[in-house]
Image 1 (cartoon, helix red, strand yellow):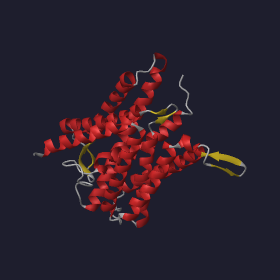
Image 2 (cartoon, helix red, strand yellow):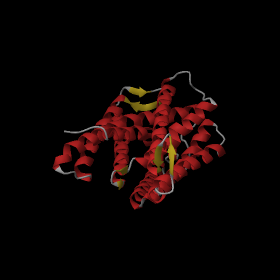
Image 3 (cartoon, one colour):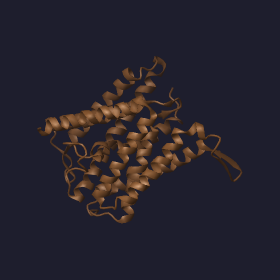
Image 4 (cartoon, one colour):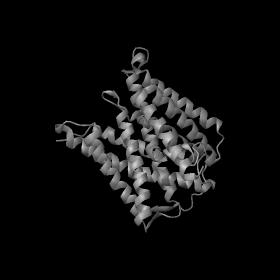
Length: 299
């Protein structure tokens, strides 16, 4: 079987599994991304030469605990409550607090990752940096991914599927445009094939996809049409911009480790980190944007 066919089959299986699990139920969604997280943590541990046992246990504890709180929030309302400094707290407060902590750590790790990417001297990682990235670059961003589809009306799988469509659109057209007219390297020492033209092309087509998603997939009423377009245009830019940075950071991890792919679980297409590096890095910023929207009024 040639490499192109192998990649096509692997990609098709991945997309079908991903979309089916997101659409089927919240439980299947959480289970699949829990599996993805464990595989990604295993791959990251191999890249950074961490002992796999502690990272896997840590990922399982954090992800399963927070997932349990989200999935069974209604059942736990009467069971989890406590008083602190004269104020009563319940399950919703616990989820909000842990979400804010996860988001803050993810953003700090993202900043650390950007510094790491642009540093010419950072070719090794300290033990502290490895675990900081493990938590902030992997585990907590996965928590953000599972939080994104939940809005005021509960679980909405269309939101996450749309974000994946934006990522796939950006990746596809960044490659096509870069291959066709790309002349200026984007970050040659880390990813020699990426070009500025490809990056700009990917962003533009992702924004077009965001417009089409807002108009046809969510089918908003005329009254809220402009609001939806603005939200999905900004989301497309965030996903494209930070997704590209996430891809570059993962490329630097692989370059330091001296490997081409993060793993080989997907024949011809590398590992889970290779497939999810963009959304892993972009998810905290998308989630932060959605939180900001709660305080913004559109005229």
